[in-house]
Length: 166
Image (cartoon, rainbow, N blue to C red; front, side):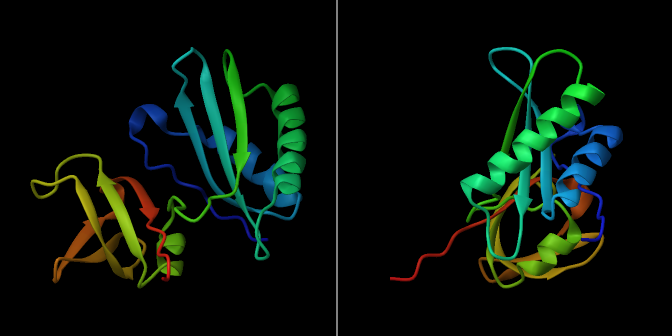
């Protein structure tokens, strides 16, 4: 699989260091999975949580998560890139998958997404609408009949909203 940088839109304090990204991406990629996203978050009990989302065309199962977790855990133990205590969590992005990269937004055109901006732009932080366009720098959402353009650099979090057919 081709290497693509993973971006984490979780504010400056939660940015994943480039060296950790490269280590995680390389390990996940070498096992035949697509590294979907990485989050490094503070844990309420202390330490940090390293959450790694993986993907493959036929979907992700528990065995896939276990395989990646075992291998990635061993690599992290040897390389020790995270100071202090941390917990590792490996999972599928799921139906309400987070979106991190411009190419991921492009994959979900015409889907409903929830977007939270890092600050109010223009006067609003939260959006929910149909994703109608995406490029390297911005996305466009159809919200209440109006198209709203949002800069990717302003996005804190974005998730696909699952749609269930009745």
